[in-house]
Image (tube, rainbow, N blue to C red; front, top):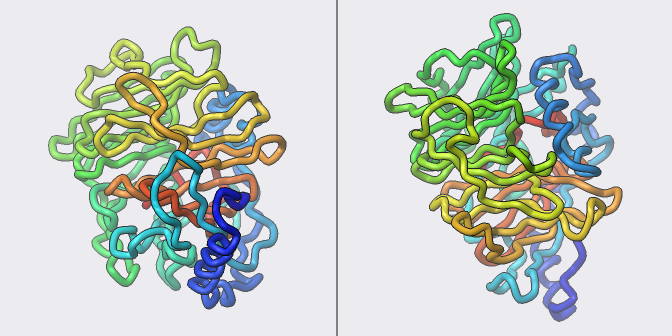
Length: 405
């Protein structure tokens, strides 16, 4: 991103130096040996077919961000950019750091291509990454049996509790594993999540901040195709909604009562809209119960609800299909714009609509899968401070929930 020219040059230079100093030691330890191989995505797997279905309704150039891609070819150091404040839109004085370390989560989790395994589709594991440097915690990874494929991860409750979804192709069943991350970044309490049997291939996950509801998109085993669902963990009740149209980008309010998602919806001519549905809505056709929240001229990229459910962060394209992609926040009651948060993609050929992950407080956000395929952007949503991390080991599979904070 370009430096904000509304800031004095000496201030911007000081910010850059401050960030570089913070991560210089970590950057120096990354070598070419840390780079992943170039796994070949499985175009014929059920999960991959979900991505290609989504591809049909994601408009124009942004579709490049949804198809399976190879890992970044050559990144050997952590890339750190200066903090930026959008003029007139975000308050706060940039300091070159993300936020108070006590406030921001120390770790994030992500699907990672297993460099030691071979085969198609590429084997994935879940690794723990340090939020300050983007480096994985050495020797720590979550794996599943060879008959399953890890392909989605989400926070579930506090910032150290997560859930991963793994698909068993032969049985056409998704298994869920709950796990925690210790203060030192180690895996703890790895146990199967006690939920009813979920038939189908879960591709995207969203957990509520109170840890009581888990939402998902699913490619069914039969002719029903893509579905949207929610599991109420206290009771084991599972609600599923369906429609011939696909769904993506599920997110939940903190109490799990409201589920946000992106879909063309009826009568939208294929343009992506943001919708919400109550998680206690009756099962069946989704658009009988869903409410349209946001419609934009160029459609909507990915979106994520605020903890209160009164606001929604959404990726919007400015001007045309070749215009830049920005992250805005809107009111869910009216769809009106509150403010622009950041510019995510410059437009033109370097186009992307990154995945979004929000921490439990709703203050910090991660965005992943930019044009360079290895970049993770961390935001403090109150102040506008942000910096970029290069995390080349992340799994190159897209269409799934790859990262969680």
